[in-house]
Amino acid sequence: KTITVTVTDLNDVAPTNIQISNTNLLKGQPAGTVVGTLSATDTDTAADALTFTTTSADFNIVNGNELRTKRSITAIGDIAITVTVSDGIQSTDKNFTIKVVEKIGALIITTKDNFSAPKNADKVIVLAANKSGVRFFIADKNAKFSLSDNILTFKATNFKDGGDNIYRVNIKATKGDEVAKKTLVVTVTDDTPYIAIKLRITTANVSTLEKTDKVIDLTANKSGVSFSITGNDTDGNKFSLSGATLTFKATDFKDQGDNNTYYVNIKATKDGETTEKILAVTVIDDNVGVIREITRKESTAAGQFLAFKVGRTLMGRLSHIRLSHIRHKKNKKKDKEESSFSANGFVNGIQVSFADSQTNSFINRVLSANGLSNVIPISSRKVERWDTWTNAKVVIGKSNGAGANKTEFNLKSLNIGMDRRIAQDKIIGFAIDRTATGSDFSGEVDTTQYTLSSYGALELSDKGSIEAVLGVAKATHKISNSADQGNSNGFFASIAYRADLQAQGVDLSPFIRYDISRIKMKANDILTSSETTTDEAIALGIDISKTANYKEGQLTRFVSVKYKSDLRRDGNDYLGKNAEQEVVMKLGLDYQKDDTTTSVSYERIQSTNNKAHSYGIEGAVRWKF
Image 1 (cartoon, rainbow, N blue to C red):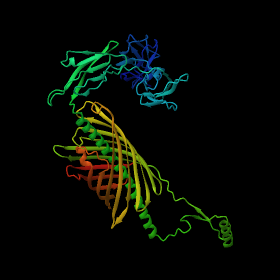
Image 2: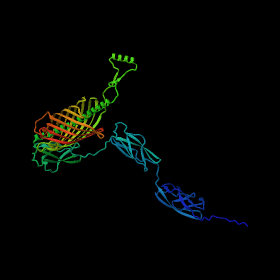
Image 3: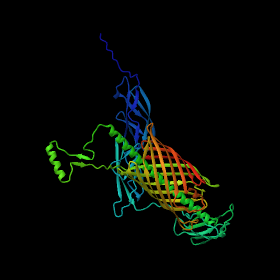
Image 4: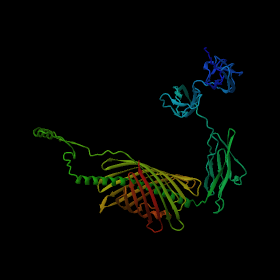
């Protein structure tokens, strides 16, 4: 008998591993939009036999396993749903979260298209896009625009009357594989940005001699201003005002220690805008002769002193160039003597000759008959480049004079110059300088001076040269007992003959020099009229130096001795008279490495009448660009 056994699938294993291909949904999508495709695993049921269902009010499942929207969902946020999968007998549930997100389109540059920029003013533009992490570029070369990250700058440009004042730039933005482009336009306008300027009174404090009315012109930084005296100042009765003219009434000078300064409060008004300022008038002792003498002497002496300091700096520059040239020629000569090479035929030019002696003889006779030579001359002139150099100097010391005239002083200077050798024996150069000195002589005047100079040298031989300096000067003199400052201008010049000798490896440089300066002091409260002073001096001296190699540079030890005598002497009993004849001694060290020289020195100046002397420590750094 045959028995048939039929095995049936009991579906006793439930589905597992329920998945969905996507859980993000862009807001505003129409009903029926596919969110994702569902899947699951069942060991005893085929995948296409599984059934997916959901009870969500927002989503349904179609085509067996597609999760779709029932409606258009516009609210951004999370929506929780439960999906059930069944094999007909067993079933499994799983919760999912569908994220509704903002719709993001293509990359776009969101910066506006058009901008305007006032003439001669930069325009800064911030670039932006509809996505983060974007990089910006200027798509084509455009000299008017520059870009740093997302900051685009349009360079300041003048307005063209009747011309094209519109400038365009193509901007490219990238993020990943996305690219966006946009053309921005900047129009230059003839409008100048308005900057509000506050009204202010520009009149400065003044001083006046006792028993002398002082007329003061009131000024402001705007035109059409009206002035008035305001407040209840105790000194108000000493002032009167007419329009913009303020008058201080004549007043006696009080003994030292009393208050000789008077104040008035001035109010300025323009178009509803007002401002106030307290002006001060200082009364000075009428011993005008003494005051004028001190001011003139100290100011002119300081101007002459600073000008001659500049001259000596430039003379030092000429000496440096000349000595370097002499050492170079000596080394070159030494190298030539040590060499066996013969430069015959090439010393004065290029000698032309032919291999055939008869032809050579014939050519030479023809040239000689016509006054010519078979040597093509070569110019010995060496054309050199311009050297640019600068020198910074600080001097700290003390001046000792008769009685109580003992004052500390300082000097600071900065020189910038350029020079060149225009021939083997000629040097020319130009320089500008700023020099400032602290309290000088009796300490009533501090001076700051600017100079413009030319300098040069003519080398007569290896043993000597003529040096010259010519410059103009302009200075301000701060006077301690006056609210006004002095101003001066003038010129200075020096010419010197200097010999160059050498003995046992020591460089000896005796010299004779003539100096002249002419300083004109402009009129102010103390100097009621301009005054001009001319100073002439003759100097004799010698510079002694020895240079040796030290480490990677050259160390020079030097000593200088000089006697100077003024050729013009006014005979006034004033401390400056002590400088009419002087003996100056200076010793120090120079260290040069490459194009930089550092110098430190000690200097003592002794007047020959033994009533005054000064000494100081000087430091300088010189370098060449």
